[in-house]
Length: 134
Length: 134
DNA sequence: CCTTAATTAAGAATGGTTCTAATATAGTTT
DNA sequence: AAACTATATTAGAACCATTCTTAATTAAGG
Image 1: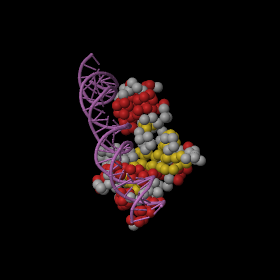
Image 2: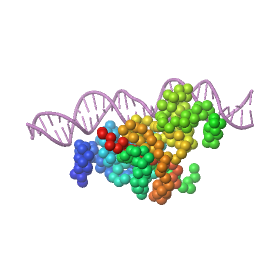
Image 3: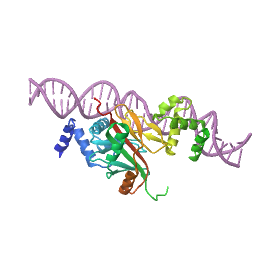
Image 4: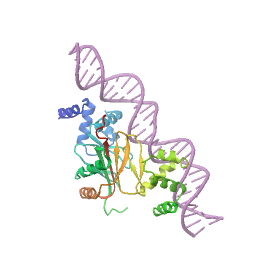
């Protein structure tokens, strides 16, 4: 189980340090979409700089995805264990995972329109609670 | 033509100041996805603070959309004249508009999955030039 | 015109993120 | 298993895009 995490890191050519194992375990066991600061609060023995450095490595390795555009102005992070997109409740800033959308038609349309080869996508939807009184 | 811009602002309950007319005209005639700083460079008589304030008003009024997640770390802005999404060339940071995707199935799926009423969406795709030697 | 609430603007302040440079460690080699 | 080396970690400083402050200006309606 710890060996499994070690293998994941090695597959991505990342040195299996204690900090990275701890952070990977943390990300894979939380679906709370934390910020770097929230992670550092939960894991105070890992410096904030290392949280940022490691998250960047994880994002490059596609182990983690970034969620931007939340009205708190901070980046949120999410384990990229399965393809999915995010729905953000703009009244509460709650971030909800969703995975019931097939991106293939979107990607094909974009490749046809631009001539590029799509390597990554980000789909964020913003919504409100129906019948909510504002 | 200037009266048309004035009407647009008034429809959104925004005072038709010279700065806002100039900025709206600028946004609607440029498809260059500028940052606030780029706009201020092109329109130096409008203060940077006003560029930011006005863009925020325009975004709230859905006259302009924000493009985040570009690797230069800055927000880019785009006139929201028609529903569309963006494709970002990660090798050059070029931002390409695309409008050949119907978001209705995506929105329906998200509403079914979350129970929220979707009010806004952001779709950003990242790609590279095919056959490009890195 | 007058009034007033909203807007503009210059610069200061903020704060999330990145950088620096010194120390420690993982992974590999003898 | 000791030595080597490239990489990782860290505390704190620095950065800089964005937001805030506050005083002067202005649009819109009476």
